[in-house]
Image 1 (cartoon, each protein chain N blue to C red):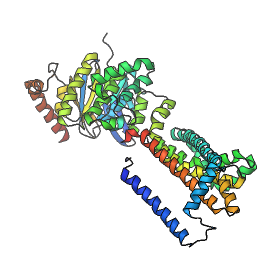
Image 2: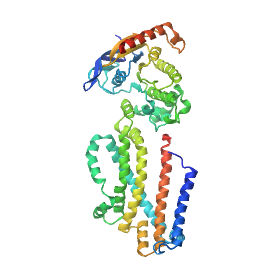
Image 3: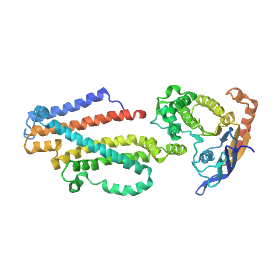
Length: 255
Length: 252
């Protein structure tokens, strides 16, 4: 018997009052799979992520995480938000921000520092543990949020346009870092973006959402070899072919 | 928050010197009788004599003690009730109307009530100080809790933090700037009420010292007492401003 999907949505829909946000979403993500969800703003992709996180309850249908229904947030599922400036605790230094999930999970205080330093080193913030988030650049703050999410040792990582607010260079660096970090632990990733190239570069699969109300329009596999590379992957004929296909799909959706 | 710049300090001292010169001018020209307004020199020497030979020092300490005790107690009560109201809609529904009823009452107007409850003693004065000084910090705490970044509420939910963990790891730290602002206002209120309480109950302290000096036409002693009160306010406010800057280092 195959293992349970890491994430499964069965005929999920959500409405706020008479406002239908998502309808008839059926989706399944295998353990260790990297799935990117793209769609225009207002297509409900963030809402979808929030339901998987257990922050929102669907109006109808069910959401499962590792075969269990999602009724509330779980420590096995970590979220990285786009607005790192708001998601970090501004009064805690980088070190103490990473400490937060460890405190919440009840890790003994004496075991925390080593783990925190290991995580900070993984995201390249080893020399910034004493800085407050406000003293870090945007890219570094997002790295810090990623380190905090990894501190949960999540099976599933939900990322909501995490690089949307960063410049192109930082964005590419962080894309590669995320790929490296999640491949180490075979973490399942649900990655929301509005950038087609980013979705193709990162994902094993790309799911495109149609808007008003949000629903799955296309679901394609990305058979590009790993590890991926900013130059060779982006110049790969298959990448270019998929990029054209996705652009055409998105244009059709929004026509 | 900006650093205290040397230029600002110099300006502040210059302002005090101008005030002193004006005072000297008014007394030299005898625009006001010396019985009512002594010269700065007379006041300073009365201050010196009172501190060294008289009982001005224990009286100052008594007032400062009362002020700080009342202020700390008020801050503690304010932060506790404020946090409770801040995280619990039920508690808010219960307590808020009562608070809105009590808040506009002038602290001095409840002194008769306090006298009948506690008698004419030190704990009555302390009670009044606490009652008056609790409001700025209470409102600051409630405000701070009400303005927690929604994203951080989500983070606390994602990490399944308990309500207690939320209070002391997110709610309270978030409210600290508002709490400190409230505590600074509250310290001034505490000083005022400590003195008023002393005036009314003849407890040891600067309030009583000032009243006695005025009643016996010892103008220099009266002004010495007032000078000390001003100094207490000045020093405590600067002390808190420096504490503010250290505690709120993350805001810079």
